[in-house]
Amino acid sequence: MFGAVRERLVERKFAAVPLATAATLLIMVFSVVQHLPGGERFVTGIGVVRASLPLEVSLLRTPLSLYVPALDLPVWGALAQVFLVFGLAEIVLGRRMTLVIAYVCTLAGTLFARVAVAVGPDHLLGFPRWVAHVRDTGPSAAVVGLALCIAFRCRAWFTGGTVLVLMIGEAVILPNLAGLEHVVALMAAMLIAASVEVFGGFWPRVLAGVVAATAIAAAGRAGEARRRAAGAVIP
Image (cartoon, rainbow, N blue to C red; front, side, top):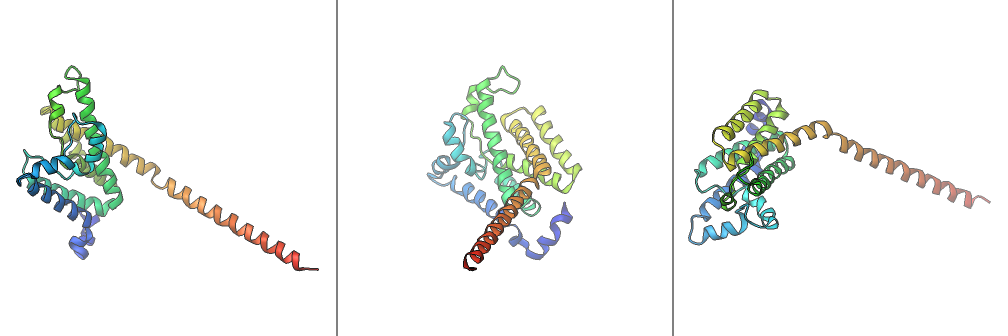
């Protein structure tokens, strides 16, 4: 994994990871703003998700909720996680795939919270009603999902296995909403990684074939038109 990113980081430094840098700065900004007078209300209105909110509101806030640090955890931990893991992902997976995985994993955790509250504490994966009012923000679900996809792409099996064991162990030893959301994020990340591995080159090949067929058909129509034009001018 280190070998996959070393050369690019040495050559370009922070310019090699603009997405990770921007995400880290955004978390820092939200952390400062939410501690200012009236700032928490502003941050809550645009980026705080709770299972008690209407679904459409949660979906609108979910992209920004990824960058709103949890109030009960040190912000430097979120900053370090995001800069390191997002930076690795940006180089190894590409910016577009990094954003897709981060959002899908965060959204998977957000939707799981709603389901867990709906089924109730009598279910193995359920939670009592009061959990619906718990603030559900932070980059941790995106971070663990990206870490697994990076390890899969680099074939860093020990690192990927360590992430899986730690997150599952956390959910078993300290069962809480965040721990189970991490496991759900890992499941979403595994599905994405497997899909890209199996079908990653399929659709580009299909698109290339369609473009080539269209070009051949256009060339054939152009040739036919020229032959007809030539036949029309011959007496």
